[in-house]
Length: 167
Image (cartoon, rainbow, N blue to C red; front, side, top):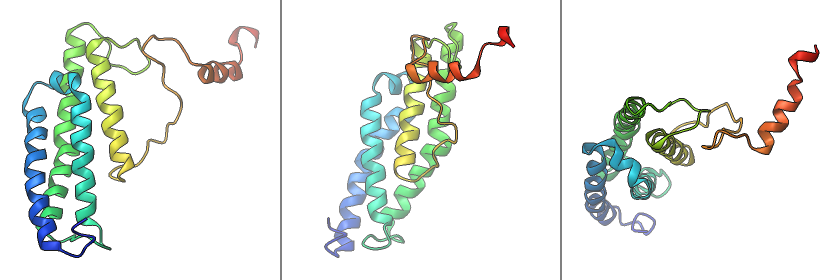
């Protein structure tokens, strides 16, 4: 609101303080075992959403301050999260799942850690897509649910393929 009111100085000052506080929450998830992010994913998603929303306001060329300190700081942090922090979390959860005898492959029945992995990946990527930080994946086919059964749309797609026995 301060950016929209034209007070870029106050907006940057307040934004930098809020960014510092949000970064402390993000740092908790970054420095903790990835399982904490999986168990507290709603807190991570909420913090990430607020942080990116604030970054988007600061970098908005129409009313923000794209070359200001808040924009520079938050953009650098968001880039680090998506390029370094989140891929590391995903890798850690994948190892944890495999060490626990779970398949970390989509389409299989997901165990505890694989479910955490998929939840983090899906929601963090959805947030990134929502804020145009990344493009939506080209593959839009419905995923198998955690029970391993197909939903109605998937069954209908299978029906279109025919039966290989009667060729």
